[in-house]
Image (cartoon, rainbow, N blue to C red; front, side, top):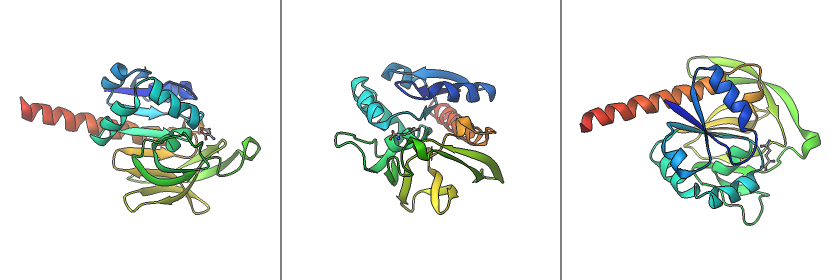
Length: 205
Ligand code: GLN
């Protein structure tokens, strides 16, 4: 099972460290050929406007939308969530999201760099509730979500960790937290996807 980390721009190294600690086979993704080989993809924090442009120049946009639509688990953090969203408020006019996550999100919704903050989170990880510190850096603010979106953690009424089928997204940086519970959750989604694919391959052969 291979987990890719989109490495066009931004904070991909910390995700790599956490996933390697969890024993995952991790690879950096910069081209469509590399994307074709992964069973899950992390879209890290960084600058969503730049990432959006690089998705076009790398030729990744179309194959990525196609793979997410066919079930590839994807995990966006901070700028990564903005890239996945269906609607961006305060984006750049030429910034086009992938539209695979039914949320309306405001860029820098908690203010600028000076307004970055850390707070305790309680996260629904399926079987139990896990605690972790949430690190918010020029974070986006989720203003609304559709019924298809599950809210797994919130801060003062704002969704900060959400899931829509195979798409997991956080407005904070779980790779900088004091434990790995969100990455564990994503690794389980990837493992489940791997099992389903293997089963359907067996049915086909
Ligand atoms: N404010 C950044 C953006 O709009 C996101 C910040 C982050 O990823 N830490 O893309």
